Length: 84
Image 1 (tube, rainbow, N blue to C red):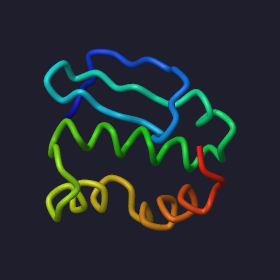
Image 2: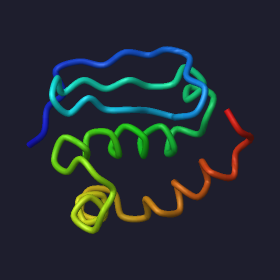
Image 3: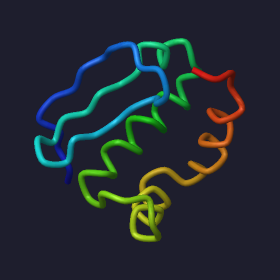
Image 4: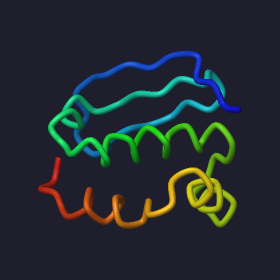
């Protein structure tokens, strides 16, 4: 079980979300609300996964595989969108 201590939304120029692993807080890009719900869910799960594993290596990917099969498709979908 993973729990965040809080989250915020604000305009961001280069990211859909970020996670402060020390404070266990997440920050989401205001523009994310304009994306398909499955992409929003992916970004939330992605940031929560950082509370288990800080980097984006094999352990992080295994966490995503376990909790959101098909995440790679959603990640690709977000990368296809116009630049922030």
